[in-house]
Image (cartoon, rainbow, N blue to C red; front, side, top):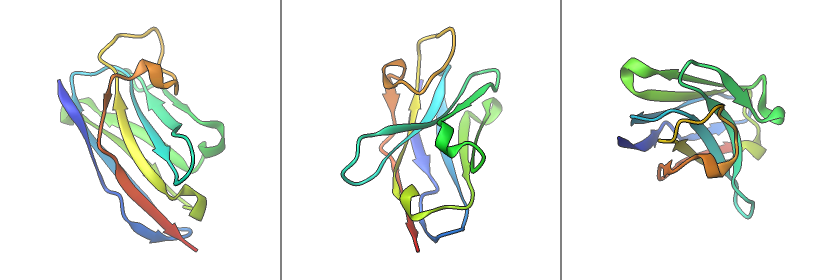
Length: 121
């Protein structure tokens, strides 16, 4: 298993778009979490090995998670970015085979170092 490594974070204007990438292999559930300054880490989206996705309700429609198993990568496409999306974004992976993937942190035992997203108004 390869520890997740994120990339793609950047500073953008509100309304802009970004695609975050996560390189990782040998995992089942994969997810994106984020932590804004002064706030707790929260789940954004998760994707199962078969491509089934789950989103935090507030982000559904603006964010899209996808995975390319051949490239051992997971992506988070973010559109219509808002200043409140500013956060460190973390890729999380699970080496345990779960019945389903959720946005609960206990399911994930491998975490990347994070990639910073800054959205200015």
